[in-house]
Image (cartoon, rainbow, N blue to C red; front, side):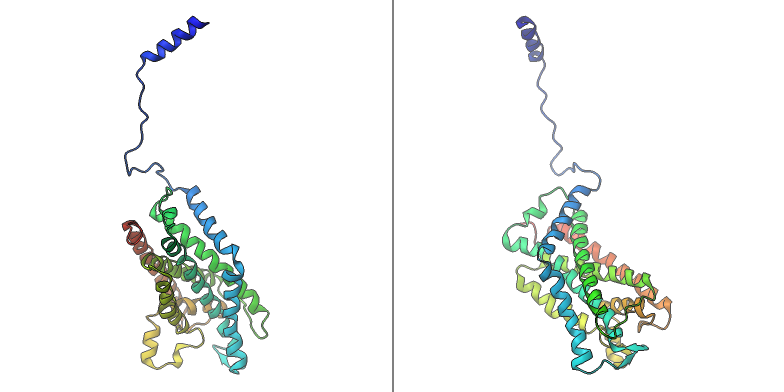
Amino acid sequence: MDDQTNSTDLLHADRPIQPRQFPAKGEPIIHNVNWVGLGTLYMKEVRRFFKVQTQTIWAPAITTMLFLVIFTVAMGRGDRMILGVNFATFVAPGLIVMGMMQNAFANSSFSFLAGKVQGTIIDFLMPPLSEAELMAAMVAAAVTRALLVGLALSLAMLLWPGVSLSVAHPWAVVWFGLVGSVFLALLGLLSSIWAEKFDHNAAVTNFVIAPLSLLSGTFYVISNLAPAFQAISRVNPFFYVISGFRFGFLGQSDIGDTNLAVLHSALGMTLVDAVLAVVVYLVLRSGWKLKG
């Protein structure tokens, strides 16, 4: 037995030891979509905001709901008719999608910025995820939060007297709700890449996102505005999202007089999302303000 073992050892000893071959530096090992990594990052982001759901879902829903209370009760507009429905029914869809978009921005604008401030940004950059996969996971998590806020707002508004949320065109509700949430999620991701501290991110929220969303026809139809302000409203992408989303519920919109005009707006916002996604991807790929 010992002789056999020694012979085997000598046989293997004569063979040269082959060094282990590693891929060249920078050469990807995972050549297809890393679904495991993408799903893991998505679940990590969802669990992050769901852990504090009182702050990230229910509080924004209640805050947005207060707009409905103020305009229908405190300002006495409950009996006012707009587009053939009472004011509460008119304003409810706009408030729902406004809350969705603002929270999509809040979610995607936090993670990268917190990583840079806390020095943990390497946790996003080190895993074997491409820039597209990283962006997709972050945007999907932000859209998930937006949808949850939208559902919470819808449930709250269904309990409000005089509000009707009957759906006339389901495709418009789904389409504009998604493209609006993706639009703000991409903007939030771009903002978090640019920002170096939380004050920068707060400035974008307070001086860009909030004014554009509040001055987008959420509480009025733009036909009541002067021609100059109507023109300004029509270059505001928030206007098309809010009016298109409202069209899905009421079957009417101030985008145009025909359903084709609403469809053109939906396609236009989809194109805007696609262009913005390319911009965010290129910025991520460049490593601007992320890789030292």
